[in-house]
Image (tube, rainbow, N blue to C red; front, top):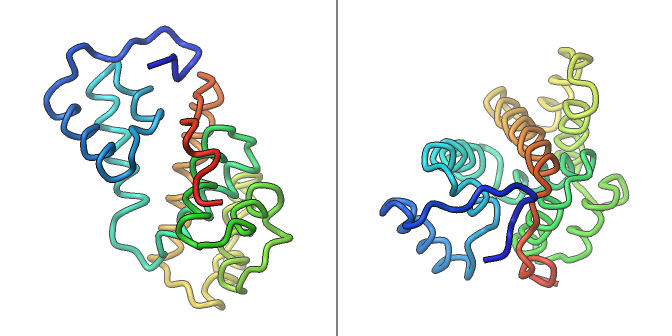
Amino acid sequence: MSNVTALDLPMLDPLPERMEKYFAICQDKLGLVPNVLQAYAFDEDKLNAFSALYNDVMLAESGLTKLEREMIAVVVSSMNRCFYCLVAHGAAVRELSGDPMLGEALVMNYRVAELSARQRAMLDFAVRMTEASATIEELHRDELRKVGFTDRDIWDIAATAGFYNMTNRMASAVDMRPNDEYHAAHR
């Protein structure tokens, strides 16, 4: 494995059994082990904490679809110019939507994408949270309610946007590199 970050933090060798099983599941389901997981694999506790939060935000039961959560990931990452997340989650949007143009529009400028009123409100909120979270007021949450989001959904939108604001900053700070396979996936 080539370096997945600019830091010299080698993966644990041997990998603890739990990590090895997790990586095997990724390889089986995705055909690869995402570099973000390999980046965290220098410390089992850090990998477990990252994976637990990712699984909660992105995979737990929610009023948001998996596609909607991936759309938030891409748009937040676009605002933050996070190379790793734009490539990885852009591929996920292309896969889940079956629409390569949607993935590209979200990466470049979500405002040009053909979106439902619900999706636009969700992404506008995620962008506001990314660029100026202190300016969020009840009227912004009401805009989400008007297009059908529940208060629980608003929590999940905020949790997803917050998670990617954190991971974008980590990925950029350590120059995390996306897996090559993501670039051509689902085009």
